[in-house]
Image 1 (spheres, one colour):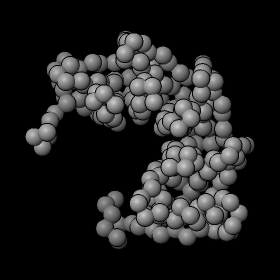
Image 2: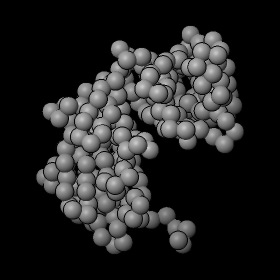
Image 3: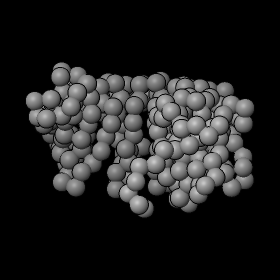
Length: 239
């Protein structure tokens, strides 16, 4: 509130280093994932979560709060789901049915399904049931970096083989063959002007954008290709 930068203090009264991700939950609790554990700060109270406390792995890659207030921590070894109200942790990995333990991203749709991106497939977790999706279901590829759920509830999937859209129970794929700048897509965001922005590292391009309407028209079979606008270092983007 005083616009000052504060150092987040973690275990043994030392600053948290090697931070990988962070979220502010619905109750104002700050969660920070690092390579050495998960830290939670609420007021002046700091909680530390590690394997000794039941965490599936100390190396945290991503964090998400679901609609029930549970915290999902993705790691290289699976997921730990934290119900901090009940002080309960449950682990989720290939032993429980995930397609892969290397977690890239976790998201939740409006119906309460949790979408888990991994290095080998996309997983839908709903009421304890896990469903696997990959290229055999129409996705562009099996390695998934990120998912994005738009205002219409449509699921978009970014991976290392192109873009996929999941609508009405069906996956469809888009690649460079039909206008994408790159098939390696690390991130998807939507702006206020009707564009999807993608980050990549291919062909000297850092980011590119495509009109969302064009993407939907392609997936709906109305057009055969999309137009990408590319941006790189020459446009002022830092490497």
